[in-house]
Length: 212
Length: 184
Image (tube, rainbow over all chains, first blue to last red; front, side, top):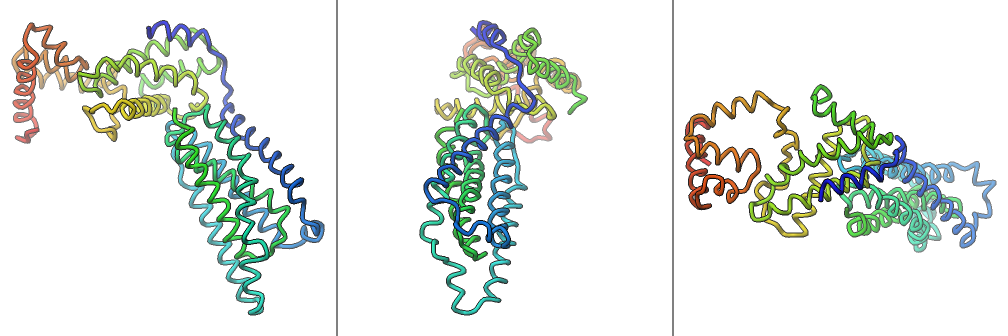
C-alpha cells in the first residue's frame, strides 16, 4: 500500500522552484488587488482632487500606512503558510505604526481649532469607510485564501488572520485613492477598524478552509 | 543541527527531489516511511496502532502536495517533524483517539533512528541489562521499537495482562535504581 503510494508520488514528481510559494501567494494577491482597484474605480471613482492631494501629507500618510500594513501582512502570511512557520515581528511593527499614527493624530488635534476636532476624527465618511475597506479587501482575501489552500499553515486560523490583515491593508490602500479624509485620527480609527475586520474574517475563513 | 548526518542526507535527497530527481525522491519517501511508522506507533495507544499506516500515507501525501512550503535554507527534519506532528494532531482530533503522549510533546522523529544517538543506545542497553531477559525484551519491544503489548506478549507466548505486569515491574525496578528512587 505505502510502497504503491511512494511509486505513484515519485512518478508524479515535478520540479519545484525555490520561489514557488512566494510566487503563488504574491501573484494571487497582486492580481486580486488589481481587481479591487478596478472595482473601486467603477464603484467609488478616484477622489476628484487627486492632483492636489498628491502634494498633501495626509494622502501620503494614508498611502504609506495602508501599504505598509499590507506588506507586513504579506511577510507574516508567507512565514505562517509553512508547517514550521512562526513569526512575530510584523505584528509588533504594525502596532508600532499604529502607535505613531495615533501620536500624529493627537498632535494634529492639539493644533486644530476646537470646532475642527470632530471632523478630524469622524470626517464625513466614518460610517462607510470601514465597510468600503472590507468590500475592497474581500477579493484579495479570497485570492490569498485560495493560494493558502495549497500550502501548509501550522495554524490555519493564524495564517488566515495574517492573510486578512494583508488583504485589509491592500483594500485600504486601494480605498485611499478614493477617500478624501485628511484626519490622522480618522485614519488611525476607521481604516484600522476596516483592516482588522478583514483580518478577523480571514481568521474565521482560515479556521475552516485552511485545514490540511 | 547541520552536522547531524541524518539531517544532511535527508536534506540532500529533498533538495534533489525539489529539482525533479525522481530516484532521489523515491529513496527519500521510502526512508521517511520507515522513520514515520515507529514515530506514529509510539504515539498511538495499542488499540489504535493500526492507524499508523494511514498516518504514514497521509504524511507522505502531505509532504508531496505541500513540498513547496519547505524552505531550502532551513533544516529538513524540522519541516518534516512539523508536517508529521500536524497530521498526527489532526488525525487524533478527527478520531478522538486517546494518546500515549501529550500533543505538546515535541520528541523528534529521529530520536529512535538506528544511526542517531549510538551513545544513548549503549546507555539503554546497559540499563536494560539489569532486568531479567524476558522483561528486558518486552520493554524493548513495546517502549523502544513501538510494538503493541499484545504483539510483544504473543512473541513470548504469554497473556497480555502478564506482559503488562512484567513490563510494569521491570520499569518500576529501573526507576527505583536509576531515577534516584523516583517512582513513576
